[in-house]
Length: 185
Image (cartoon, rainbow, N blue to C red; front, top):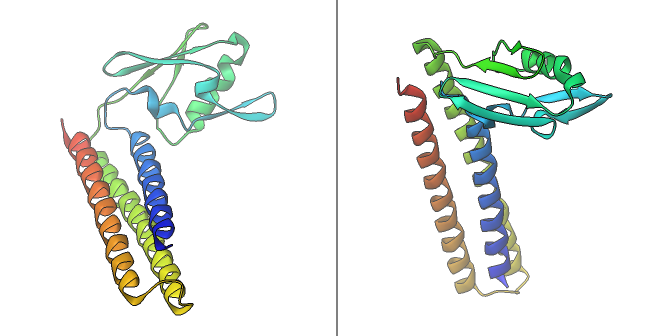
């Protein structure tokens, strides 16, 4: 009975890790990566549309992104959306494609980005601990309602803690790899 609680907690922890990974992908590390533009939304005919659904984004060179929009009339809209984004890119539009030069990161900007990674990591850890707390409360309620034994409660708490430790270790490894990527010159 407590196994469902543990499985649900593990599932939620994996989803939290997945969200953390996608947030890390959107933090630029000085290299051109098409995933940098995943969060850019374009006001296309009155509705916010993800840039990735409006055209192809490629990285033909290590420091350049190329945005090839399918609807050429939307080119100025895409350009404006990129300028408004928090990415700090200055797009150049030649009438067919948009070129984005990814500037070299300064030491100061690299440190800001590592702080952002740390903040994002802490938020993910808080989410993991919250999942642990909810799962622990759930199995304690089951024990109080005599649905599981005291021994089952001990086993369940141990397994929940192991899952938590494993998830936090994975988060730490992902953050360390991203920090290394950012600080790489």
